[in-house]
Amino acid sequence: MRFIAVEVDAGPAHDEGLSLRFKRAGDAPARAVAWVDYASDAGLEGRWRLFTADTPDGEGSPGAAAALVEDSSDGTVWLVTGGRHGVILVHEATGARERAPYLAVSQRTPLG
Image (cartoon, rainbow, N blue to C red; front, side):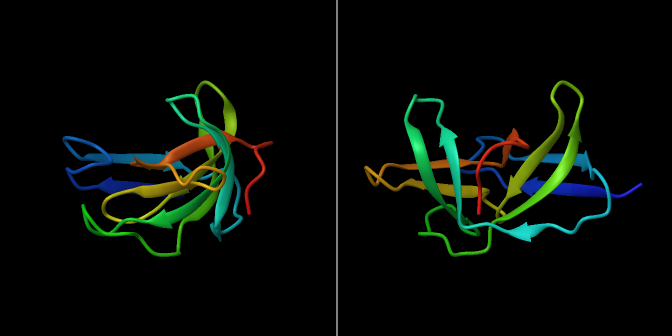
């Protein structure tokens, strides 16, 4: 069985930090992703650019990755991961910025 570990330090993406493992679905490798169609917790929908966050206050850099994983409630989903401080999302239409430790989105969600 292959797993993907998500290790996020305490900071803006997650107050206490977190350490999780997700079971990979199949043998396909993770792929680089630069954007995702997403609705934020604040209700802002649309295309979001993705960046890895390796520091708590940095701008982020390209390098987010998506892999198919098994989710106990939703079946197979895309797991989008970033750096030690998670993922930075920038809303293309408004420039709004959000941070997340990771994203788990439907397999049907457009991302690229």
